Length: 168
Image 1 (cartoon, helix red, strand yellow):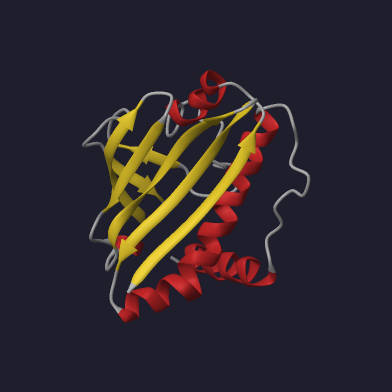
Image 2: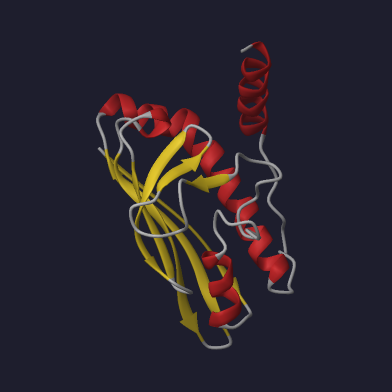
């Protein structure tokens, strides 16, 4: 089965300014990733091909990094990404008067992993990505018209996860 998920936002800013958001991923000045509300993105080295890491139980390695343009990651075969053969990426696409910041997940999986994605991972992923894109719009100087809000299912999943973490 296929997993395909896209989130994108139009940013009224230059490629250079938007590129700094991608370049800062997992670094000490990471302004894109919503690490104040979600597990921080971290790697065993700088953002460079071959670096391993992820965020929380989501594990991946850097497949491609083009400074100021693109960061692409391949899922590792353990943690929450076990069963997903593919990866995700952040990429910028220039336009008139701004840029598109786009995040894409593409993966193949069996039915059980697909069901896990649909029911558990995707709602949390979608909430995280919308928070990140809200950060990008705020940094670009134009707050989102409708800031992201977590739905009831996301709040319930986060509560269950937090409760499990306290018990561990």
